[in-house]
Image (cartoon, rainbow over all chains, first blue to last red; front, side, top):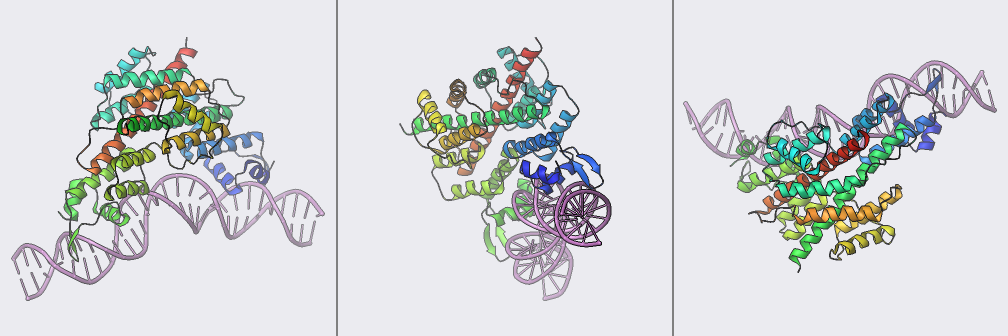
Length: 205
Length: 205
DNA sequence: GCCTTAGGATAGGGCTACTATCCAAACGTG
DNA sequence: CACGTTTGGATAGTAGCCCTATCCTAAGGC
């Protein structure tokens, strides 16, 4: 398969494919000679992954590059899933100052729920977020944390990311990222509806 | 107070203030004459609102313009809060095809939770989102909807947006938008931690 | 042998959110 | 009252992101 066919089969313009090649999202085709390269089903799959991550999940090129690089480097699946979680659920750019009330609040919720007491990106992000809320003077009571964490524990118990291991690493990333994104958005939409419902009940009878 | 003082007190550069004036986010100061205008505490408050909506909530200029225009037009508070919800929780760009299985699923959850049976942005967004998930072949079982909606009902019961009515409309928007954003992000961080915890338990003993 | 096409390099374009420059009209300071 | 400074308004430029268009050379098919 050559560039034009790859373009037609994937629905991505040749110009964009070239761009992805340049940016290192798409591995180069097997060069037949100086001006001909052969692309495979792997390239098609990769393009589908890129499309889904851009258009459905809304990741930027750098984030996609990070994920596909891990896939190409043969990183273990659990690490890959953690990386997907990082970019899909906005765990990036979260570095807690460590050691304040926020750390204690995070510890408390881990104890309360009986979650394993491991350091993780998610835990750091939670601590950092609680610090941010404190700095904005948005109080987060223990009962709020209890209710929220109970709710999220129940939700996580249903296993958001597809657990049936897909065939290829690219498909694993695609399934996990799209699933995580769509489920978290679903949760937010339900939250909006629940809020609106409570508000209507309060103000209109 | 003139432009320079407004700039120093708000921490926004004069160039940016001029930009916000041009874009209609900030009302013009009272013109003393051709080359002098006087700004008030209202402008300072508006600038704080703009800053928070940009930097904390991450809204774009158009979304901010929409909100402050409503504030300036004296729109009722409930409508204002609905508009805040729209932009903060991504309910925009959601137009369901109406009448499919997604509509029924949304109806079912409203009945199940005993929420008032009103059409709303939130409900449309939920229906549209369920349609999108169906088109991506991501199944959403009734039990998932039950668990999710129960969780969000509990969370909404705690009243995410500050209900104590703030002094000014600008502060109402600020409090509601920042609160809603931070709480929804908190939920997502807890979800990430819950997911990670479940994964660890499953794979590491 | 010649026209088309692939692939690579490079430049350009549209969008967003500013940022910098320019200018004329006051102000205020000596 | 003259003169440097500052203000507000207009306009143009910039940076980052994600492409998109053009150009060119080398090869392939007929």
